[in-house]
Image (tube, rainbow, N blue to C red):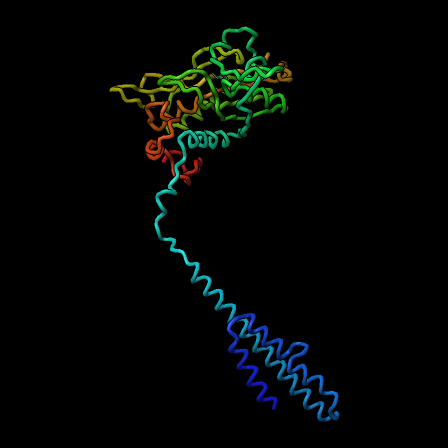
Length: 355
Ligand code: PHE
């Protein structure tokens, strides 16, 4: 009789089409009110000899059914997984749909390249707000009140809101101030970001980008500034013997101050970078003025250092041969497709910056 039951249960197990059907079979055989369990309960009515024999047979049956259920369960799970993999199959060899072909803007790419080079030199990235106050943008940077340099910056002022006159920062130099106010030397940061001046022509847009650099410690001098910028420019433009020329200049927040030109040629209306005898200005720099250090709570008898500020559009145009500044911000997809970069083309010194 148990043989008949066994055959019946085994065929039910093997016929179970899914996990829940299989579980129903398990409950009907081995559950509290299951058929095998029922026979077990009747063992008490038998004589000891009968009970022993019957008990062994029932236990063997129970084990066999349980094992058959486990096997069936594994088969069903494997079949389920296989069906799912089949249903979710994707063809990874299909080309990307054209509308997902996004490009990285040359400004983003250029800033990433600059950050990669300066990071290699031990600079970390600092940030500040686009909306600044007079103190951070001018006063702490040693622009005296009423100084004409304030007007030279063609500042965008925000509508008067009462206590403090707010403005759109005219350069990234206020990040110098914020960094020095909040950190003790030694300091070695760069600050890439947006800047604003009321100006619009072939070479000026009201919004543009700069990257600021600041190094403060007890020993850094003009020689270090020179070495740092020479290294940077040669790496960035990928011209090993690119000459740099430091010309005396003036900024209220540096003393001495210099403007830096890189060597180029303009022969035949084509701009080429290198040692060709002609020059092109790319950045301003100098030793941080003691008044600035003091305004930021740094002892100017003990600490000193250098700062520089570079126009990102300008060097991006040079490096990538983009002729008109204004096109950067026209959001023209054809332009972006032409001058943009692939999303996975992440600048990295080891792999080379220019591709
Ligand atoms: N902030 C200056 C500018 O916008 C550039 C600069 C930065 C010069 C740091 C010297 C030192 O023109």
